[in-house]
Length: 209
Image (cartoon, rainbow, N blue to C red; front, top):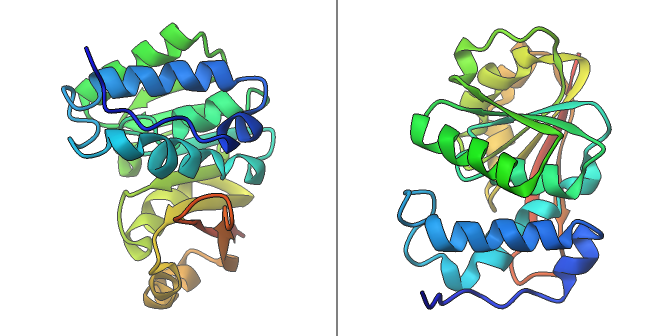
């Protein structure tokens, strides 16, 4: 099968480091199966590396050793990408759809990842044995909707690290009441990848009291 897959950007190997070969395998699997499984759209292959894989791995330095939940993992963006890049961090990939759970579980096995598990559930229904240290999410919902789903999963002092678009600052403003209700502090927008990619990665980071 001939794939119109974007060439790997030179910066990818630098950002992933030693696990770059695993990242390459994951990207190839996503390119070969993603559209058929409804994980990515038909127009994503020519920008798969830059718009999705590198876009996600830029978040890896923001994570710290501990337990990170990725809410609405879907195709594994950012959860699987981050699990590849940060073998020192444990991940639980939270996804309600059976088809996507099967994909995530299969990729963990195929890629030989020992630091990731999959939990089939909606975020609002989760009952964890231990609270999370950090929560990530990408393209799940508006911040004011996302906070009530994710903040209760975190330990005191835990962090939200959620990927957002150009309207990130506006989402914070619109979520002011929810931010206060769930006692979030140090709410900030981080811009990652300037000078690395045509489109930067924006992250809203906040600490839960």
